[in-house]
Image 1 (tube, rainbow, N blue to C red):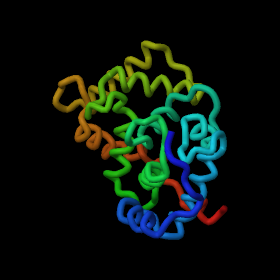
Image 2 (image 1 turned 30 degrees about the vertical axis):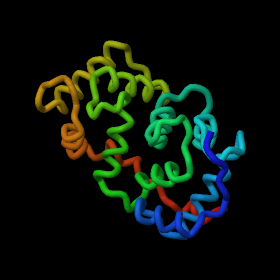
Image 3 (image 1 turned 90 degrees about the vertical axis):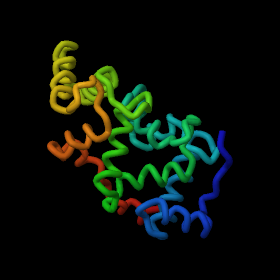
Image 4 (image 1 turned 45 degrees about the vertical axis):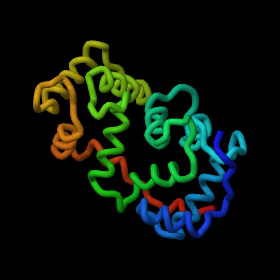
Length: 191
């Protein structure tokens, strides 16, 4: 477990996070308060565990997409999101985040084994999770066809893997793929 964190952010933490993120001082102070609230919702331990994360998103039970997002936020892979990871993860969703920053975050959701490529089993896993959570129904065969069609379009070098550059080219053709990756930081003004 991580160290307990204060609900007050220190000046040096603000400075360091301003350099790493797209948030200003006021936004950082408010995000820090939200972190403190979420991280103490189940256990007061200064970190957000997977259950606290899902609860904050309004999700219950098994949610594979939330698990993937949690894993991308959890940069050091220790099973917890600390305050810095939380702020940096939210920065990818900022209106000020660049296209490539959003793209890297999205790519990392699909790249389950973190090897720098998306293979068909990873894409199928995310597709199944997305359909399950949206209560859409496709047969296993239809899902495999969708994965094959995606690879036919995206796997430009035909190696059976989608690299970051290939993913980038696909998203440039279909920018709606990352349209949902922008959130307002207006929540920062609430306490």
